[in-house]
Length: 165
Image 1: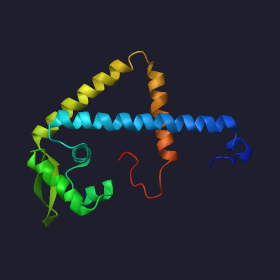
Image 2 (image 1 turned 45 degrees about the vertical axis):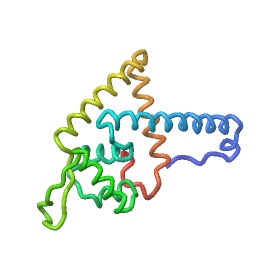
Image 3 (image 1 turned 90 degrees about the vertical axis):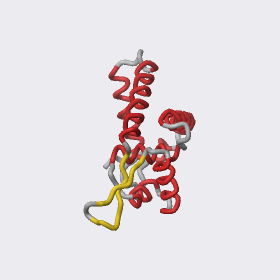
Image 4 (image 1 turned 90 degrees about the horizontal axis):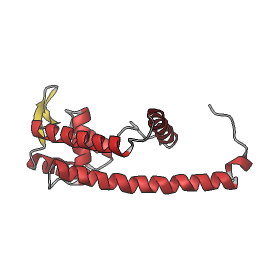
């Protein structure tokens, strides 16, 4: 548990300015991430929507899984998830298979073609990031990752199930 910080420190002009700077930079980061997700979606399939790309990526990382699990993770109602899943199936990116534990349910998994495209897009993005941060020492990159992790943990909501989602 952290020590109590005097209220005069919490409201100091320097702290207020620094917090504003964080808000501005996080806003830039969010806009950039949205753009990148759109680019990645189109690189996987020209008709893939950015929201569907996020679902596809999650199934790739954590699947096979039920659509109801996606509904919980993305906090989207089952009807909307069902439409997104069907879109991904229609594009040949997701497949349904019977759940071996419950024959009434189905599990979703990425198709081999989708897995290949996701891997290619990830490699391309990693190469671009490595190029753009080429003059950053490894310690700076690790420090940034640690600071982002600390930031995300500080902002976790009690309802967050997995901060990596």
